[in-house]
Image (cartoon, rainbow, N blue to C red; front, side):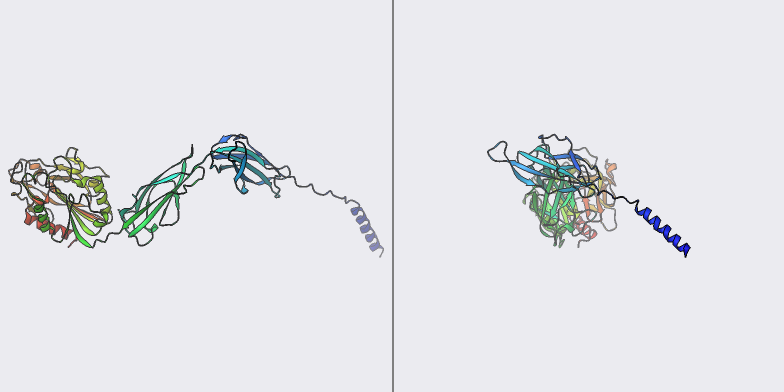
Length: 493
C-alpha cells in the first residue's frame, strides 16, 4: 500500500513538471502573393511585327511559382483621332508553366495598340494582384491568299477506286502568298468533297481515292487554304470542281488517224485521206475511228476510257515537224489513259524519232521520258532514207512475218522498199521483240538485218505495242493478219 502511494505521488509530480513546460505558439504568417516582371524585349511602346515573343520572370518569397497566366487586349484608333484608342478584342487568361510565349497579336489595322499582361501564381494558388504589363504597337497582319495550280478547274481526270503501282491518286499542286509585310506561310491544308481539312507543310501531294465521296465517277470538289505566321487563315481559299471518270473499257478499239495526207508521200502521189481510212477500216474492222486533223486534236480522256485499246497511226513522213503524238499535251493524255489500265498500239513513219526530233540518232531516251517509262524502249536508231527494208520477220510463234507493199513505194527514193525505219536497239525490261528487219541479201546495209523493228511491252497495269514503221505501207493482206494477231495477243477479240 505504501509502495503504491509513492508511485502515485511520483507520477503526479512528473505531470506537473510536464505541463509547466508547454508554451503558447504564434499564428502562421499570411501567404505573400508572388510577383511578376516582364523583360524589356520588346521595349515599351515599340512598334513590332504582329508575331512577337514575350518573356517574363516570377518570384515568391514564401513558396514557389506553380504557373503563370497571360492575356492581351487589342485597341484600335477611334476614327478621326490620332491618340484615342478603343478596345477592339481581348483574350481570356491562359495558363502556362513557361516564361515565354509567341503571340500572333490581332492586327487587322495599319497600326494596333496591344496591352499584354502576365501574372504569376504560387503553390498555394496565390495570384500576383498587379500583373506585369507592356504596351506595344503592331503593324497590320493580312490573311494569305491560296491558289490551286493543278488540277485545272472543271478538268476531267481518269481515276480508279483503288491505287495501283501506276495510278496513285489525284495530283494536287497549289501555292500561297502572304500579304503581311515580313510574313510567311507556315501551313497548308486541303479538303475533298466537304470532308476534313488535312494540314501539312507541303503544297504538292497525291490524294487517294478513298478521300472522295462515292461513286468515284462524277463531279467532285477540292478546296485548299493556308495559314501564315500571324496565325491568320485564308478565309476564302481556292476550290476546283473536277470530273472523275473510271474507265469502262466497254468498247474494243479506237483508231486515231494522225496521218497527214498533205505531207510526203501522200500529196506527191495523190493518195487520198479516204484511201488511208479504208485501209485501216479493213485492218481493224470492228474499230471506231477518230481523225486527229478533222477533229482538231485528241479525243477527251472520257472518250479514251471507253476503249480497251487505242491505236495511233501517223503514216506520213515528218519532214519539217514531228508527229503530233509527241506533243507533251497528247503524251499527258496518253499516260493518264495507260495508268488506269488502257492498252496502246503505235505505228508511224519516224514515229519514235518524233519523240526526240531534233536529236541525232541513235538516241537513248532518258528515264522520265514517255518512250522510256511507258513504251519501255531505251535506245532507238533510224535507217537511211533510201529504201532498203522489204519486210519483217516474226520472232514469236503467234505472229507471222510480213512484206512491205512495194507498189505503194514504187518511187524515188524508196524503189519499192521502206526507208527511215526505226530500229529498237536497246529495249527495257518486260518487253519482247515482235519483228526484226529484213532486207535483200544483196543489200549493203547488213548491220540493219535482224534488228528489232517492233516490240511488245507486258505491264502490270497496261500493255503496249510499238511498230517502228508505217503500217499503211505494209502489204494489206499481211497487215490484216498482223492486226488480228496483235489484238489476240493483247486479249482484245
